[in-house]
Amino acid sequence: MAPGLLPAAHAQPAPFDRSIVRQTARDLASKAYKAPSEKLPDNLANLDYDRYRAIRFLPDRALWRGEKLPFEVQFFHRGFFYKNRVDIFEVKDGQAAPIAYRPDLFSFGELAPPGPAVDLGFAGFRLHAPINKPDYYDEVCVFLGASYFRAVAKGQLYGLSARGLAINTGEAKGEEFPFFKTFWIEKPAPGANSIVVHALLDSESAAAAYRFTIRPGDTTVFDVEMAIYPRVDLQQAGLAPMTSMFFFGPNDRKDVDDFRPSVHDSDGLAIFNGRGEELWRPLHNPRDLQVSSFADINPRGFGLMQRQKDFAAYQDLESNFERRPSLWAEPIGNWGEGEVKLLEIPTKEEIHDNIALFWRPKAALPAKGEHTYTYRLHWGPDTPKPAPLARFSRTGIGTRGDNATLFVLDVTGERLKSVDPKNLRGVVTAEKAKIQNIVTQPNPATGGWRLSFELLKEKTPVELRASLMQNEEAVSEVWVYRWTP
Image (tube, rainbow, N blue to C red; front, side, top):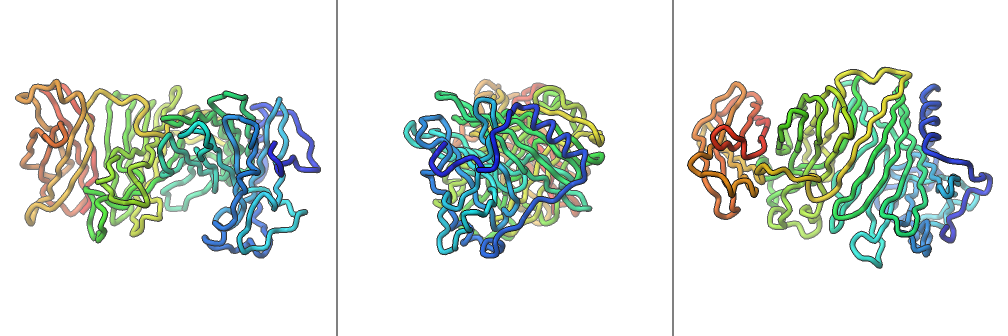
């Protein structure tokens, strides 16, 4: 253990295994909900963003610093948006020892540090590993705030976030935000390529236990084992939830006055559904809240993707949106009947996450039961196994005259190199609207094809669907979109 990171003086290590977290969650759910402690010393209770950022963990105090292990751990101080107390344990040789909060683990800028006897706990933590260079420990993932966590792969920067559990997201009665209250971090063996983190979640409606096996790399993978213990019947549970930001892009530049062509952490929703279809849904910053549901049985995968990876598409030297990861959720086993749910929330600033995505089971999760799910999260450049079908790489939308909207869709992929141009055609359908002037032509600039069409203007939202076909065979994924006036 690094200098300054010591077990709490009053607590002795206790035996630990994965079953303990589930039993703790089960016991927690059998009792009335108790809100987390937000009590802080007066000078830390009402910090603004800048003063909170001035509180920094001292890297030389990182857990396992100097032990030549494949991971190190740094911790976050409580304050600003992150007032909930989080307890963190180190697990070693089957024993769990609490990590004690100490003010001398942090630098406080102009703030006076708390007294040495004050036990504030932590707000969260971050893992570091030599993901980009063999001799430097880069930050690879962070758990901070409610049940939020995020990660990067090699060469990437932070973008979208995942969550442990979503409850009542997008419902009129208001969303409930579960929070991770305790973590157990297993000490890795020398030379290990993964680390295991256990987490205890609590909320008014449910408690839950998690086991994350985290493998950083060209794609950073989280194996997630989850057990939910509802206090009440969970009618609106969201599994494998993720949140992102879409401000504008070539399909959506209404009222935008900006030097950049696009601003987003994710540009589309991809779904591999249980029927074998591969769907692509470009994201949108609507004028009114839009909720889209994709019914399915036993989904193969879904995620918020950042397909556009060229600097020229963003022209932002500071944000580097082209280096933001995609996040793909891969269910393990059968998840049954339900829907992939997408929320697109209007925003006038890029600082807000306005996109939410999750799987919602059709049936409620009954109270007093145990509901287990296993899935794999892939943080990286793409889906874990890119499909052979051609992909929609760009969606451009603009006005055509006074009564039509023009859609220009670029399609790329190796599959297009083997098609017969004479038999390639674009298929476009619209729900309760008229489509005209469907044109399919080669795009020599991309080496792919371009599909364009016009939608006669409507006063209500229109659901659109398009694909490329060779005779009766699909050569592209299916493009789906909700056009809003």
